[in-house]
Length: 172
Ligand SMILES: [Zn+2]
Image 1 (cartoon, rainbow, N blue to C red):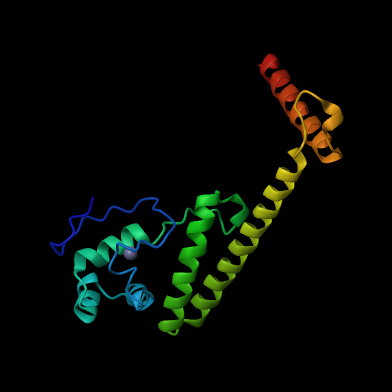
Image 2: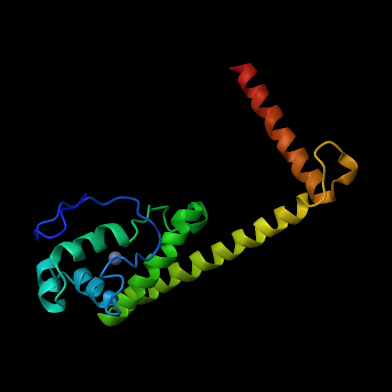
């Protein structure tokens, strides 16, 4: 854990919660995007602290724990887990605001692109989930006559997958 108030916190980046932490003074501050903008522009934590009146430790904690660390999937949002996707949506919005504030329009447009892609991917996953839910509604695993066409296809693919794994393992 970072030591909060000594001004020299330990940097411990980690996979953080993809949400805004309302117990964090920086998250609760409406100007938080401008602090990120300053950091991206090369300001030190102490300089941001001096300009904002926030404690350096609180700012450091915010930058390492509240701002999500996004694993790099080469720009492919479909490879991200649900949690990573949620983090990406939050982070790209923060980055967009920060880029606009620092007048970096190319960074703003790329973070906006990432955000739109991530939102579209989340939408696609939600639709897929709804489809899956509808697929098993009223279906009994023991009675194939209760299965719809989609569930038949799903189960056929599932069983094929199991069989080919069994085949591979028996070859090895
Ligand atoms: Zn925060």
